[in-house]
Length: 251
Image 1 (spheres, helix red, strand yellow):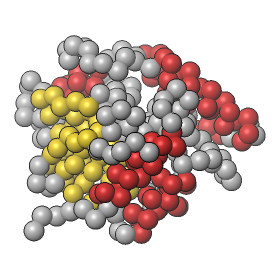
Image 2 (cartoon, helix red, strand yellow; image 1 turned 30 degrees about the vertical axis):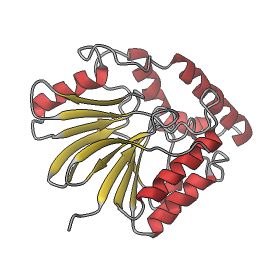
Image 3 (spheres, helix red, strand yellow; image 1 turned 120 degrees about the vertical axis):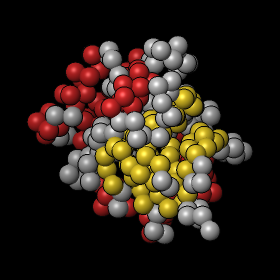
Image 4 (cartoon, helix red, strand yellow; image 1 turned 180 degrees about the horizontal axis):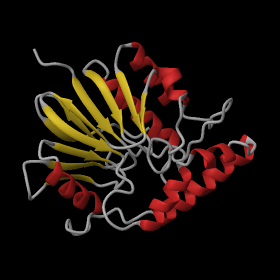
């Protein structure tokens, strides 16, 4: 009998002003989680689950309680939730750990499952170039900067986060496939694979393009998880790895 499956998804961007109805998309995501709950042992959420997020000591952004409640339900069933921060939800702290025992990650991780080695993360800031963003990210992840921002009243602070997120959305990179020799994540994976040939799969989000790309310098395969406003794509890992699409009537 096969062990229960492991699932990977990213880039829900709940709360985005520039994407289709977040409430309806949240219901689709909850339906997907319902559809996999009896088959899953672990769920990896690889960043940008929310379009903006900042945790104050006594306050968090309003909304999307259906998703949070469903994750709590799954955790109560014994399913381990793994939450990777993305460029839109960098400031996740311990709220999700307290509410549904999520493990939080701020950098890409290498894990082993089903006899395979996987290198996984959100995927922002990887590979060459993108210097401006890397500088901004280093500031946003700086503890002193976070502590200073936390002094701003939540009403104003969360409005600023929402505005910054919307600005970032307008400036996001193109969501079509560039020449694979120019894709930063693929370049990163190829360079990493030279030093870590034991990796079988690279799984990232951020680019919003469901993608499967075999690296030319080894056996490893790079996957991008896509997004959840059009393709609703995710990965299932069990006896094999599959890039899949969730189909549901529009809610």
